[in-house]
Length: 345
Ligand code: TLP
Image (tube, rainbow, N blue to C red; front, side):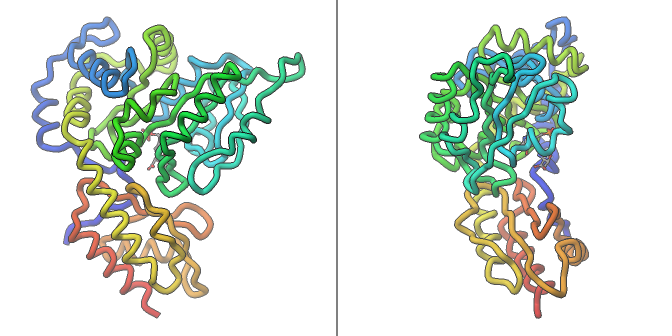
């Protein structure tokens, strides 16, 4: 039986169309500005997000770090959610590399941050205080069950940030999932953002790569930051070619992943020990808790693994399953059956 890999959407392998595009890609030295395929990808990404320019980088982590380094100097402060990927899963890179001071505020379960808390956290112009430069949001929100921040939330946060002289960065690793879930053009959703990072290598299926998207001057500076981090690549058209296919062919189908995630959530929510409200599942991420005296989350994951259903534990009682284009509707039913078998009292 095939393995049903729900550990992440990062596990997706390139489609046949991507493999062909990669094999045939026209390439050159991108550090010298010679790679036509990277340039095409950067133009396409900028156009899709309605911004002036874009930069191809090796990972989502580097996309966020390049963005923060470009917005903030040493000792400047970024306001962000306490559940943000940038805050929790990026090895403290903005502090380690950029001496950027993080100011975490509580994320609500829907991934948003209370605007009044943001307003109150903005520092006064005072020699004692760090300079608040940046607000960073995440959409969809990974640790908040893939929650979508709607347009009104995005726009209200942008208005507040801009009225107080801050820039707004979006960790949009899965921003196409958000746009598809909302039925909006991604460019509309990110219109208020000064910079956006997004990943080609998650639900969109490309093997490697993320983008930073912003104004031309910002991207020029971001290019320097990428160089500092060692992220400037040479004949990277080979991987950019897959990114072009990802943007052209893999966006609309994200709706299937969302439907599969919702079905999975509905299928397991009633099982003994599973704590999950399926209504919280808006995109391709299903986060649930296990409440069983006779089984730890690690044991549940191991027993499912033995049934060829792979997922990740998240610390504490929580586990995460992420749907992606390799996982079919039939496999979701098989996964639900495996949960039922493993959790049978
Ligand atoms: N997230 C990964 C893990 O790091 C948790 C995953 O499997 O979900 N922003 C967000 C919101 C992300 O979820 C991720 C990856 C990144 C940035 C970083 O992307 P990469 O892994 O390309 O550095």
